[in-house]
Length: 103
Image (tube, rainbow, N blue to C red; front, side, top):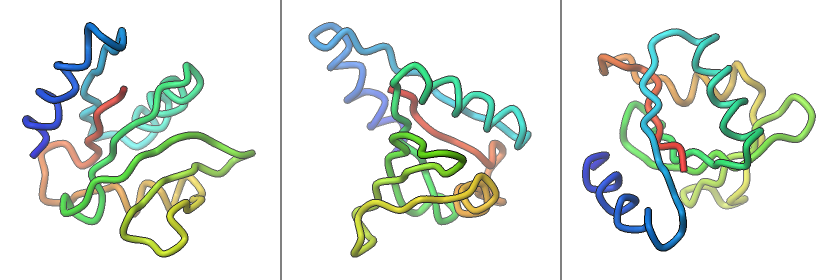
């Protein structure tokens, strides 16, 4: 669950100087601006995709594409356009359709 993941990240806070925060957004443009800000600062995001059923890591960009590490994919690393990323990430059943933990 997201709460257990955040608790585990909190345990790493002191030893790794990690200051995780939750990205919880409804609006697409704000979501992408926060993603760009986090990745620009070298902070990957643990994203909940596939309507809340799976965790992945959003780790960077190449040009206008976003790089996602997905253990459920044979290629492991997938690149998405912003539109593809938002489509996979969005959970229509959640109050905040875009949810991630920013490391």
